[in-house]
Length: 138
Image (cartoon, rainbow, N blue to C red; front, side, top):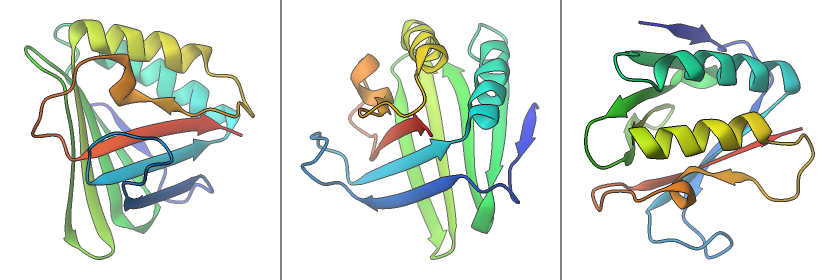
């Protein structure tokens, strides 16, 4: 399984209850603010994963946070679980076309853009999903 270990990185991340700022009907918002190097590295890894047979990418973040990225055969799902207050696990499982749109948008993401990339707006997401994932580059 491909793996990115960003446990000692200085990226900004937060999980908050969903607010009307970005709209939507999910319980939480997971926001990642990447530096340019992390942005490039994530895009390169996901280009290998978000293809048929690409497996799964494990992304370890500071404070025992993890995100698993993978392709699904059917509907996309954005899920987050919090087994402990300081340990969050998210899964971004996208169907093929959603994954392609996301990857293209990620690669085109401009540092300092006012509007973050919202994965849920790039394709249909299953009702069991409980988080919206936002990505921006500083």
